[in-house]
Image (cartoon, rainbow, N blue to C red; front, side):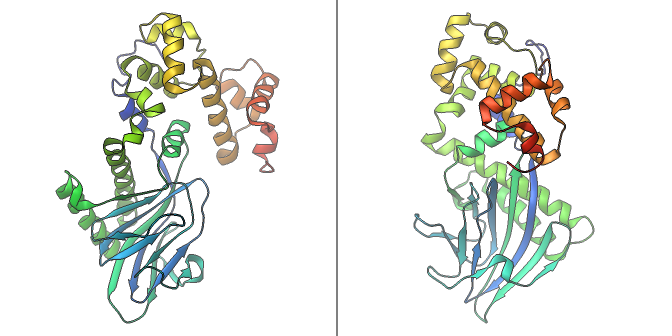
Length: 316
């Protein structure tokens, strides 16, 4: 891919959001009546979300005060931490996998629980991100994010989307499962965008580097083609900077030297391919630009402390 390719995004932060392609682990429509409480277990490497479509509830996450959720609110638990949804703070909870559920599709189910009191309905899900740039972005998120519909400038759009989503979840006509999951993915990205726009913590570090016109362009090129034979010279040229100025600015904004970042991105890509797709070590070595399988294996073990074969076999 040429460094002056006109198709390379001029919005590196938007490009990072583009990488937020989600692999849905599960989605469910939850129908609760007070008194009720749901305990969700830790799901490492997953982002969990909850959309309140009617009624009210509370999100409880250890170490944080309970957060009230109103109709239209959207809550993210970013790092797979165990948490609770309850009709009131401190309510007794049943475990997610201890409750009966109606399986509607391979990844979609309906969950019902509670007594004879006020109803609350939610759409919940757990998703995982495979692309390393997306994982790096998600790693920067706080433990939880609550987007209040009333505070969003896109309130009408969000409300219309939620109504459409709730209607599809309630009826699940042919193709309804696909519509619900796609809309959920869009809402997750919208919630992350809202956090980036309003939280000072999102203005520096790697996200700040993406906003930098020159360093952001270099990052976009590396994310799009990590296997290319990148060098400090080619990256500096793509950013229209001298090598010394580029190296200093990249390290200052990203927190590590440019070539270390390239290698780390390649190793994260390899880790995901080995664990989740079972790619062969030889194929990965060729794909990521290594001259031999042995050279790739040495680099992988040096950076991860694990052998590629052990990761591929699921024993590391």
